[in-house]
View 1: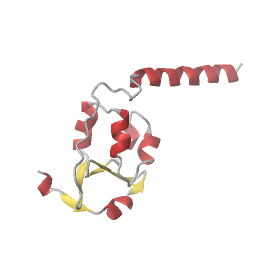
View 2 (view 1 turned 120 degrees about the horizontal axis):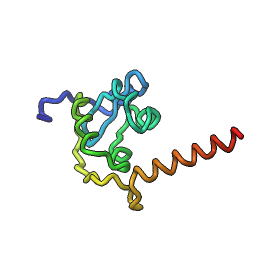
View 3 (view 1 turned 180 degrees about the horizontal axis):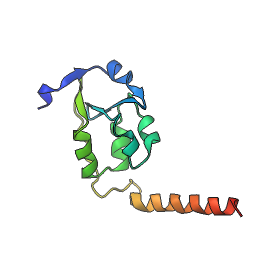
View 4 (view 1 turned 90 degrees about the vertical axis):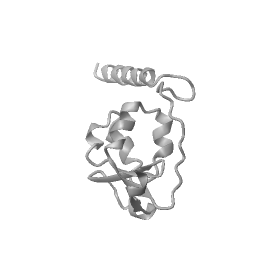
Length: 122
């Protein structure tokens, strides 16, 4: 199937770097995530930070779920010309290298934010 995909250069991908026109590269494939940015569970900022770039490392570092990969499949628009697929293993457990589950880290961030909010509003 990848032979049927349109070829893009990194230069072409880099021009799609705004919130309304946002492309990323993951494993040498090009994805148009413009319509998904508002729905991204981690917030739009993390996606905008990698707009128009190779987001493979950032995507893999988070340990996205199989659902995330299925969503990405629906956003595929092409592949990078001359690119070589890296086929990195994605941790299914959703853990960072330190071994902490993503949900635990998210819970701590929410608790700290809530504590700061209540402390500052006393």
